[in-house]
Length: 70
Image (cartoon, rainbow, N blue to C red; front, side, top):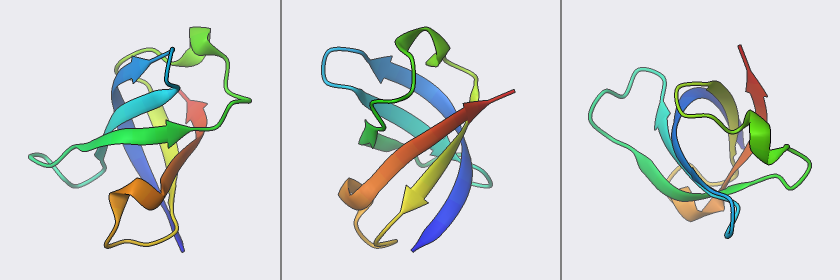
């Protein structure tokens, strides 16, 4: 399990899923990343920094956005 920094690219409030660009990765985006339900929809603005937990680094479906920060 690892925690990584990223930038929020988009957020689907209906599914509570996000597209995230991990720090240091300029071409690869993680899509359909689950977002923790305790994060308010109003905070999920494209361009914001996010913290992502990767439970399995080889399976992006096992990632969760756990924090949004400035």
